[in-house]
Each structure stands twice: as C-alpha cells, then as structure tokens.
Image (cartoon, rainbow, N blue to C red):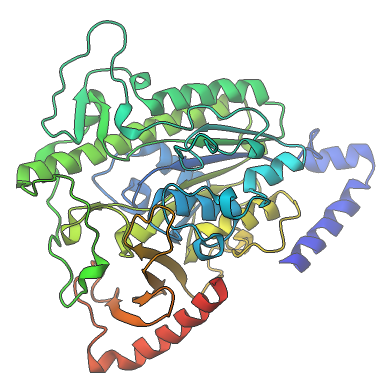
Length: 481
C-alpha cells in the first residue's frame, strides 16, 4: 500500500504541475483542498438494515448512503463492548495492545502518547470536531472524552443512556410502552439525545463548510433503553415482529460463551415482552436512521458531498433474545458483526464488498484516502483496494475477543475468548489469559448453521479444521500480545 500511495502521490504531483487552466479543468477549482471526512458512529447497531437485506427494518437514509458508496458485508469489531471497540478503532491498535478490555479504562492511562485518528487529522491542519458519542463516555473526572484529539471542545459526548429527558415544553406525555427498558412517548426528535446530536451536527457543518474538516458525529441509539419518539414505533406492526428463531444456547456450547446480562432481572420475559423489546429496537433504529438522514441532507444542501468522505459504522452488534441472550459481550456473530459503509467522491457507488474486514482498518484507510502519514504501529490495513475493487480480499479472517468476567473494572482478565471468523467458520477458544491454557472451544459452520446453534468443536470429523484454525488464531494472539 505504501508503494501504491507513493505512486499515486507521484502521479498527482505531476498533474498539479500542469498549467493552471488544465489542472483546474481536470480537478475543478478547489483541486488542492484535502477531502473532508464525515465520520458517523452508532451504538449497538447490529446488521439489521434494509441495505443488508433485512425486510422489516425501515432505514431509508442509511440505505441510500449504501447506494452511494461501498457496503462492507463482513465487517467485525475487535471486542463487543463500547470502550474497547472504540478505543481500538480510534487508535488503530488491538485491545490486547492497548490493555483495554473494560468500560472504565481510558486508553491514555496505558498509552498516553498515542495519536488518535481525529488527532492525526488535527495535526494535519484539519478542523477536528466531535458531536455525540465517539470515544466512550468515561465517568472519571480526569477523562471525559479526549480533548487533545479535537480542535474545539466535544459536545454531547458524555451522558448516561438512562437519563434521556423526554420532557419538552409542557408536561411529559404518557409512556405507551410497558417495559422499563422501553419508552414510547409522542415527543419531537430533539427530546432525546440523537435528535440534538443531529441538530448540532447540522450547525457545525454550516460553520466549517469551507473545510477541510473531520466531523465525528456519534449517535447513541439503538442502545438500551429503547426509547424513540412514538412516530418511529408507529412504523412497525408488532404482530409482524418475529420472536428469535434460535432462543436457546448453542447445543454443546460452553457456558462461558454466554453473557450474564438480564434485560429483566426477574427473568420472566413473556413472548409479548420479547416482541415489545424487539419492536423498541427497530423503532430506535429508525429514529437513528432519520437523524443520519438529516445530517446527510445538510451535507448535500451545502454541496459538500463531492468533497467529503463519509464513513458509517457501529461499535458492535447486539442480541435480541437469540441464544437466550440480550445485549452484547460475546463472540457470537450477532455481537461481532457490524454494519460498515464508506462513500467517497472518487469510488464507484452501489458497491458491495464481501471480504473480511475489521473496524481496526478504518484508521489506516482514512489516512490513506487523505494522503496522511499514519503512525507506523497501526495494526489494521487500508481498505482502499476494496473501494477500488470490491472483490479484493484483504484479510483471510477477522479477530474478535471477549474477556471473562465481561466487566473487569481495570483488572487483567482471568479468561479471554478469542474468536476467528473466516469465510466459512467461526472458531473460538477460551483460554487462561496469563498462561494461555485452553479451557473451551467452539466451532460453527456458517454454510450449514448461520445462527451458530451447534458447536462442532468436539466432533472428531472436524478435528483437522479445529487444529488449523487454532494454529492461525494462536499466531494472531502472539502477535497482538
């Protein structure tokens, strides 16, 4: 890639030496301005969007972004919980390299001098701005956000998901939902955080439109609680919302693979409760989609689309009753796989890239696309070849990991589950973090079992596959450590 980047730089350097009228004719009047970056992050969004083939989800704005860019169908997070996933993406380093596997630990506690993705753009004369949740919303007084990464103070970057204030002018309307984890009120979009994030992002675009800018817009939904304005609940008929097709843990699967989160502490969810929660997730997704649409519409109104790289990503997936699980913190496909869309002015629209990629790859990709010199220790790869040729294969597999216990509170994990996903299989091994001793294995064949309902790791006919994937995984683990 360095060779390709150097070649392209030489070509562009020669072209810019052309006479003014010729260069302007080829590149336009603002040829030498660096491209802007609109960096859209969302929280807990699994691959439940129309553009990814979900026929129930109503996500027209994200769908049209996919039609304008490249949709990566096999993108995976590094760890299925907010802080490690975001810290990894924004530093370009794996959780084991950062020594971050929990929610409270700020990456600068372990790597104070690391240059983050937005910080790199800031150092290269970009206006870098954060609105909403980009880094994790740490609660420590010393670390709320990461001020050094941004040109101006962060906004709406810290909150608790459970303090959304539905009250606007007048009295709070009646909550039409029945579960404590859901809320359905007839309020405007700005009654919740994501509506405010979209409004502030639109204001920012108007102020920084002359660029170049790196504008990070972080939406909080569809994270629990599933509280979206009533009009988004009304988009769905609850009778058409199915119950999970695989509500039981995988056959022969180890207990350590499951999370312990209870959406209902009493454990008494009825089928109606499950449908209400799934309804709420879809409503929150459509609410999120509408806010993304507002920002994209303003980008178009300001005639910035042809000058702007747009990235849309989720930090990890989510379980909605599948395997009997809710929330995240597992290595299963529903937690590890994420939506990822990249739209650039230079690359073809409506592309579908089916190769394995990781969120870790976004840092080197954006540095590459904007011709910035990235730190030498990045552990991802540039996705530029896949933007130029969607059939390009950049990775043989993707790596996701999850510690046990899931929430470490600054301590080293006792057990780590490392999961390798290739084109056919998901192989996971649970091992003592200090010694490396393997205590459990999982193998799921996605050609015959896409829901990961049957663990094949202990079956003799799959011993060679387990041996091969274990060797690959061990090599990755040694490298990361």
